[in-house]
Amino acid sequence: MTKKIFKAIALVAGIMLIACLLIIVDCLYEYFCSVQENELKDMLDVASKAVSSDGSSFLTRLKSNRFRLTWIAADGSVIYDTQTGELENHMERAEVKEAMQNGEGESRRYSSTLMEKTIYYAKRLDDGTVLRISTSSATAGKLLLGMLRPIVIVLIAALVLSLIFADRLAKRIVEPLNGLDLDRPLENDAYEELSPLLNRINRQHMQIARQLEDLNKKKDEFEQITESMQEGLVLLDQKGTILSINKAARSLFLANEECIGKDFITIERSYGVISAIQQAVRSGHAEERMEQGGRIYQLDITRIESAAKPVGAVILSFDITEQENAEQNRREFTANVSHELKTPLQGIIGSAELIENGMVKPEDMPRFVGHIRTEAQRLVTLIADIIRLSQLDEGHELPMEGVDMLCVASDAAAQLKAAAEAKHISMSIEGEACTVYGARSLLYEVAYNLIDNAIKYNRENGMVDIKVSRENKKVKLTVSDTGIGIAPEHQQRIFERFYRVDKSHSKASGGTGLGLSIVKHAVQYHHGEIKLKSELNKGSEITVALPEMEQ
Image 1 (cartoon, one colour):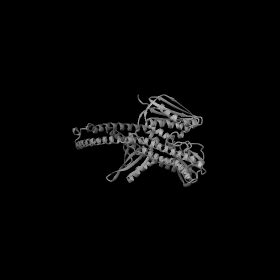
Image 2 (cartoon, helix red, strand yellow):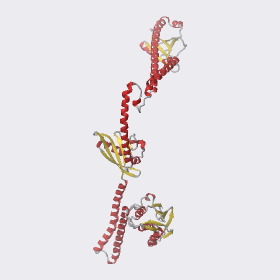
Image 3 (cartoon, helix red, strand yellow):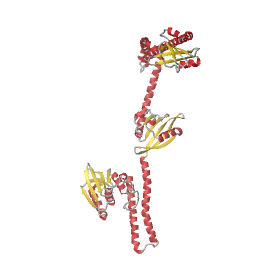
Image 4 (tube, helix red, strand yellow):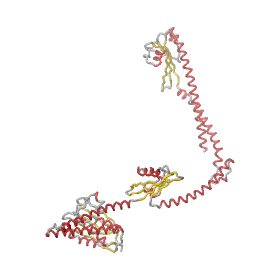
């Protein structure tokens, strides 16, 4: 407060002093300019009469350093000038041209470098010639510069006095106020006029203390509840300013606690979300979906009202990624299952109808019956795989035991030996006995499906290498082949159900299209990991890492 009083007095004094000086200089300057101009006009009238009667002889006798007279012929040439000899034609000079036309003329010319102005008055004589008088004077700026020293001295003196008086006055006013103890207002010995104020402050202190205690308690309860919520929660006022945002919401909108007090648009610029907030404020409720970090969120936005008037909005966000993925998987799975079941059934029905209608020759009967049996077996295998995936999805408990992965891999390779020989593919298996605690049937299917795929998608005379090893308390089963390989854009999706690299559901390679999906779920069931390395037209390598059984 002292500084404010101090600065205010000094500023007012300085402004008033400068304003007064400028006004005085301006008034004096205008006054003397008008006097000078009237004097010039009077002298021009006298000189014009003298020149009309005596001609240039009057001008030659005239001696003056203050004024300059120039006699100009009707064609603009200079007849005589009291200060300079030969001059250029003056017909284009403004004052001369005006005098030629109207009888009298005037003009002013300024020199910014010399800070001077020159005043010209011209009068046309009876013989058509023009007599011009001129004089130079300082501009207001030059006059002000000439007075700069006394102005500065006066200004400094006024400011010093203002500072002294301001300092004294501010101290006298503020000193008692600075000594007030507002924490204990009733214990102050200050101005009598301050007693009502101090009593009111004391009552407010007591009321505020009680309110703060209640507010802090409610705030702590609110923060503990909202911070532990899995759902995101954002409270906005009517202008869209963030009042509160919990941990889940900060993670969703990539914000921090510093966003509180700022406009919501500073952390989320999505047009859909902003429009949903505006709609909720208008209609009471709105919903919007958004994606962030590969996750899908449902935003429920509700208007907050007080006394039947909207005062803000609350945003609740729910992570619906799993539901969306499950729904998408369900739709895709239903479509794929329908297709995969329909294909063998159509083959069975077609062959059965041909047999039923007597359109099959006796010698072709074994082939059609064999086709029906093959398609039926394929249907049974598909249904078994679907049931197995369903069990894995639902997390059914399976009998667990210590399983030697080298033994399981050897059994699976022996089972597929005939299929490998049919394509002239050589298989090799190496490694050490490594025990995993798991479901033997699932681990067998993992090894079987990996080796089966390595054979199916291999080349004639290719190779399949199977290796079981132990590393960092992990048991690794690695199956590599020299087959057709997998393009990079397909490598992330080959473990999806019914996914085919060629996007078809043909029977060219056999199988149900669920083998690698069963491998993925079986490995997840055992808390393991799968890694794929593949290069198109060069082969693939799939490694399954499972936790080693503790001895």
